[in-house]
Image (tube, rainbow, N blue to C red; front, side):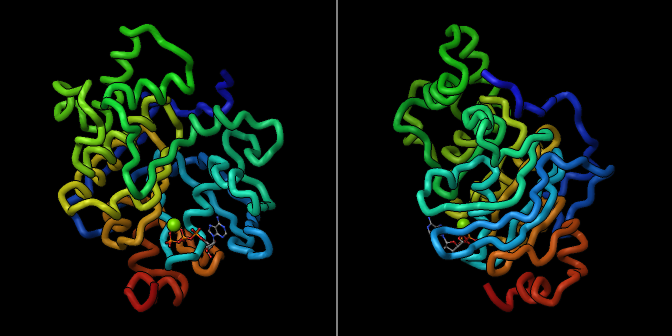
Length: 284
Ligand SMILES: Nc1ncnc2c1ncn2[C@@H]1O[C@H](COP(=O)(O)OP(=O)(O)OP(=O)(O)O)[C@@H](O)[C@H]1O
Ligand SMILES: [Mg+2]
């Protein structure tokens, strides 16, 4: 197993200035974070339809970056480029550079399994496997690492569930079906599954879209906690959510990156009029 893309060191943390869940002000964290990903001049098309145009941006390490913008502007496409999930779409073509840990992940020799382990993905609809809570995590780990001894696996499962703030709710029902959990619990299980393979980056595409406000708040709280150790990219249509949890915001419009900056700057003093219109709810 290649460790090329394993850059996370959970013990090397940046300090959190404030927990911002209860605040409506964009959050501000101390220090300048180095980039975990660098996207340079990325163009993407599906067949003859160009959907991303000359996108360049840097994703900061151990911070939360929110991709925002109206439906169809290319947020999910941009996200899926980061672990090459678009490769499975036959009409997908891309040009440019996507650099992770010094390596262009668009290159031919890239170990896709290692990449997907380093850059995990959580989807809009919670998608646990139709099996037990325990096996959801064990299977994910097994796919990436081969079979582990039972005692080792027990520890990995517990740690991932604890990290995803789910352990106390499921520890007495690890053999129960994951499908019997609530939507919010299922989404935290999917986060646990991503965490279990020790990623550097976690991407979440509208992870709270199908959840109630309390489940949403728990996920937001969890992401804030996780951002001490992991680089997080979230796609969201919820401006209040982006404001509450993100450090950086990237605003896309019709396949172009209109503006990217600190959440405080983008929300309080957007540089571009299109951004101002979007975040004030005039379109999208
Ligand atoms: N598999 C595909 N084949 C062809 N076109 C696609 C495919 N996936 C996305 N597109 C097109 O690419 C453009 C960008 O889509 P994408 O899903 O990235 O947008 P989005 O910003 O995530 O939108 P939403 O907020 O609705 O999820 C859209 O015009 C969409 O129709
Ligand atoms: Mg999308």
